[in-house]
Length: 320
Image (cartoon, rainbow, N blue to C red; front, side, top):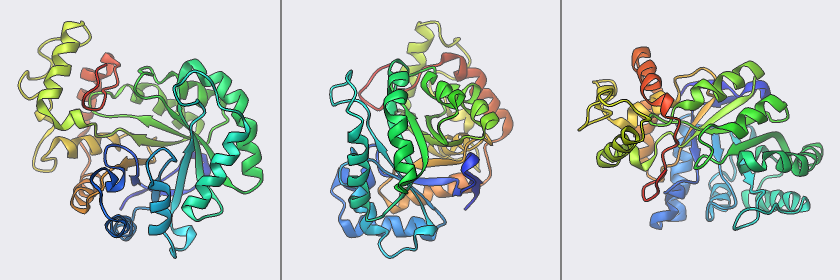
């Protein structure tokens, strides 16, 4: 397993991290047993993964991770969870005291007394300022109390196509780690968030490296056609029938492999999350990110072709 430094935290983290959200939620989506989930987590540890990410909104993921990591020395892994600043339904912010209560509930579920990174979760640019003003003092107080080590923020990937919230967060200098959506069809963060984070020595964790649409050729074709119709993508830049197959070779046999390699290509990226709940999928993703990287000319072409589109692809069933 490769390791990189998580920005100014100085923490060495595995290039592949295990996330507990996404479609699988560690296998909860298809009723995986607690034993199977624990085997996956322990297998990831044995493979060298030391980054484990969760959130209260990911079903029972916090408690399942806590059970799976029980008895493992705490300094062997980097644990992160989150707080959603907006009330359910959106628009209004939660009260400041709710952050501390949420964090303490997460610590109980995870069976630990401190998380390494605590993120403000899914912050859009329109609420970034009020969220920062209301909750940053709460985060600082929780850090002083020893409940968290580092402060992070994740973006609202579905709608913040310009990654504006994270660009502002990095510039403000209050956040140690940012979590950004980055993938083959939505690589624009390489031109904005990643260089800014590199200059500021802010850690970067990548989410959404593999969207469900990326492994569905028909869905990729629909996106490409739609972007061409909107004038966002010049016709003829990619093949009509297999828009991403030019990325493949013997070292990169699948689009999923290409997606993980691309997500890890920029040196500012500290760790890339995989959200699988199956051992065989985890192993395939580990081999992809741990093997030879995507050739530099293909990385450049991804950026040249899809970077100007500046649209974040959605999970299957959504548009935009």
